[in-house]
Image 1: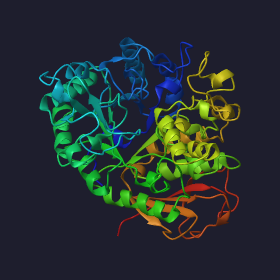
Image 2: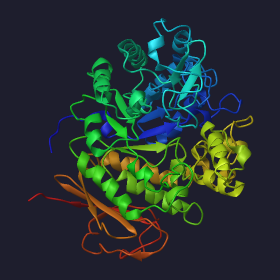
Image 3: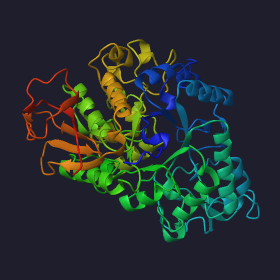
Length: 545
């Protein structure tokens, strides 16, 4: 293996913070930047290298900050620009970089550009957005918004519709306009000059949309735009970039994450996330995870990107339910399955992402309808009622699929409101914080938190985690996810019982030999058996022929 210096992010672990729900420093019930600063030592102890911060820019908060009205300022809900500068500086002292969530596919309808764009068709900012002529009751086509209803909004004063793939208050930006693109690049350079370590690019695959052809994602000019962005902003820097790309395939990911640096560092792909969604009702219900297909999908991404791209590794984010509730057991075996999922993820090649609370094994919330806050939920409820679903069916759908499952306040301690705020939380705290919280887990060496801490340390200690090639084992086994990672001198065996029944270890004793690097239980009682949700990592010397 060559010894060429690798980008820092290839050996990093990145922690996502949803600021609204992480830590509230001023008692208004909403998390803020001073709250994040107050928890930097917690993250340092965990061992992470960078923080991906969900949007904190000035915003009307129609979609929790993903509707930006000023990309160069901080929303007062979260603090000030001085607080952001202090966060960047304090994180840097601890060896942690700040990654900003940039929403460049759309802006708020209260952004200065859009306010100008609505004044007249001749305004220079008009073409920063996507407009089409029409009649009040005749949209340009039948495209729908992801949040429900038409993707076209009529503006009577102009006699035109504007295009919005999300909320009506989130008009899509027109990436075909070179002046608009230059404005966006200037914004990225401005933040890079303030010391941020990189950018997460929201719905990056939408940049090349062509609404007239009903193309939402992966339009013909998409990679042209990304290469231009890279050339204008990223080349010659250490900035890390990760694009959210629900449409990504291994083939397109090789372009997005080309090792030559022509586009981005990596993308979030969602093929494994889509496997348990009910066809035609993706946001309404989950079906049992097709386990063999799950293994095949993850294995394919590992093997096809090896040496030709780079993987992001994640189970959770602010848009997804909690993984222990989704794929595991959030009751009897919550701790065991949370650890197993951590081992399974951290053993693969790529950059691991931890979503806040994942390191505690936080679970979905058992909310009543009135407890939900997500804009997507309100549309979800209306649509399900219109389709004849009863309240019990709607609640079950929300309990399993809602984005609010990931947005409950971080569970710090057994103090009131889980130690998140001295005020009234903007969204209800999950009542299980009395059993699941950071203070208790940091004091317990056998906790989920300590499992993540140990795995982060192992990845730093053993280069094979970064550079070893992946081989899927036991492809047809209905309960075990097993694979090897191999480089020039070391082989790892990652062995995970994905379910809650004890089973024989089919790799014993031949493959399960060598040093036991990690086990998710306090000890191994029977090496020939795997306990419920047990996970192990073995390490042995390896010599190529």
